[in-house]
Amino acid sequence: MLNRNLDVNDYLGKMGQNQPIRLSEDDIKDLSVNLLREWWLATVQALSDLAGEDTAIERLIPYHTNAAIATSQNLPALFNIHESSLQTDYYLMTVIHELMFSTTGRSYWRGKNEIVAMVDDCSTKGNLMALCKAVCDVGARALSESFCPGVDFRLSASLSSGDQSCIFTWRDKKSIDDGDRSERSLEDVTIDEAVRNELSRHFFAEMWTFSTRAFLDFSRDPSNVQKLATYLHNSGLATGLKLVNKYGEFADNDSPTDIFEALWSMHHPLGRFARSSTTLECTIEECPFSDGPVELCQQFGSFFNGICEGMASEYEFSYDRMITKGDKTCHWTIRKKGEAAKEKPKEEAIEDPIKRLTNKFIDGEITKEEYEEKMAIIKRHYPR
Image 1 (cartoon, one colour):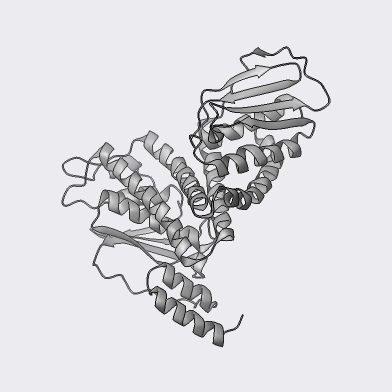
Image 2 (tube, rainbow, N blue to C red):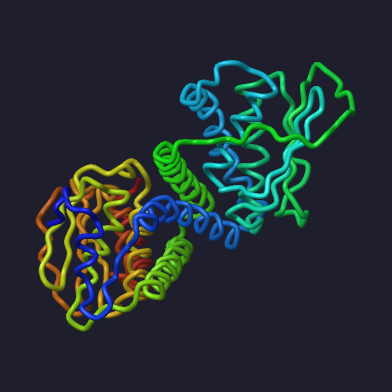
């Protein structure tokens, strides 16, 4: 079991007799936030690809509108923003964009009653029209109207529309701008690093949950849900290959379980781990995603199987219990392929037979033909 008083590098440094794999402190900080951002963006990409941009925007907007209104009520107090004005509205928006999109290349113009911000780059690279529309246009306008109703907000250009920059405008509704615009150096937003990391984790965890719910609003068809999982698997594969490329491959007698424990602990610090020379097990009794859909756990599984494929292809990740499925705890194992899984302890059965059957199909335990045959029987004998 991981000694919580031990620095992550102390035990990661023991891995690999030829070329030990070690995560730097910067890598640990970046991964804890960037993985959640990656899962969020991958889920939105899956929704856009499968449903089309217009449907994706339609499904995402309600979630991001509600999130923006909640943000307008909670975030200002954290940054001591207690007044409604052109300047404070601009400041609050800039904080959010900095947290969520790591925006760079900003420049500003300010007239007497207007502020214009131009952003040349962001973490989405302008590749997700649905996200730009739901977050930076509709969501941002909802936040502005909720916190600062005297200010008119507009997104007049965006990278996702093919423009060279994203252009945001805040204008006092009661005044006409004097037209005397000049480029000015407004005070940059500075956020304490610890606060930034904590807020970003909360933001991206919620955004990922929202985008997953939006996907399920579009379709709960098992084949589409499986396609969603594939996006997360590919994300895990890319992450695993990136780590191997940076830190080297595992030695023959080494196990990748240490690095999996470190990655998991970034988002589930209360997990209880048990290990052998070739396996890692984790039991989770409290999870920040426990109220979310079961598909979140399935995406976790797909991502970590992608990590296995990229870093140590002889290993696999497998759930046998999920709180989101109705189990009392979550439990997963990383083990070498072909090793028998431990017998699942008996727990209360899941009451909904349709949900249970669907989960079996999603997990690959039954074929499509078996799924359709059993579903027909359930619908005849267990009408809802």
